[in-house]
Image 1 (spheres, helix red, strand yellow):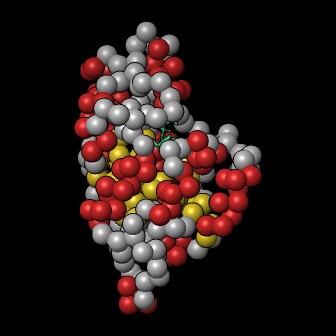
Image 2: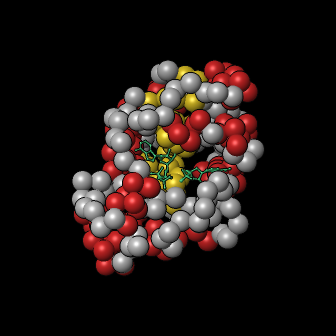
Length: 226
Ligand SMILES: Nc1ncnc2c1ncn2[C@@H]1O[C@H](COP(=O)(O)OP(=O)(O)OP(=O)(O)O)[C@@H](O)[C@H]1O
Ligand SMILES: O=C(O)c1ccc[n+]([C@@H]2O[C@H](COP(=O)([O-])O)[C@@H](O)[C@H]2O)c1
């Protein structure tokens, strides 16, 4: 477990790696655009996309793990900010974030600041995640705004935990390896993978909602048809 202590001023420019987990069935602009803006706000050096294999709290995705991986890779191929980590796809048990974070922490060492990105909808149900109260032992949590999801946390336990760890200055994320929650004012994009799948099922166009390379792949694989 990382030491969770402050860096000295000489190390205040420690690189900040951010991991963004998702089912990505499919990946869309509602993922990509807020995260690109977040990277500027929070000073992320790299954003690593982590497609899951077996999402813990939802039905199995429509696209296969390999198809979702391909779509994620196509979506970010031309943008050096992003890379893709397929480790969760090699495991057949539920993709619990705490377990992935534990392996990432081991690889990056105790002192390296690591962030895990989630949308506001994920924050609202975070208390249902496996060992949720230990997540901040491994990373910072960075929360993106998402239209249609309230800010208020209904669960007192989650609210208390959130209040105890929240920081409003993104600079703090580089000053400790883990332990903070930062809520970012990212652009609001009312896009969901559910909407894309539904539009495809109905034979409707989705070109405004996701990158062209991903749309072409969906078409070529015959994904999200009736
Ligand atoms: N439009 C959006 N704005 C901000 N965050 C988002 C948006 N869409 C997804 N996210 C966040 O991205 C992460 C991965 O989301 P996911 O792959 O489940 O996409 P989704 O669009 O929510 O999918 P689905 O509609 O199938 O539930 C989650 O933490 C989620 O909160
Ligand atoms: O660890 C958990 O219990 C857990 C519960 C729900 C979701 N997650 C992770 O949160 C990320 C977003 O999940 P989803 O279902 O919105 O795509 C993804 O990386 C999931 O593996 C993790």
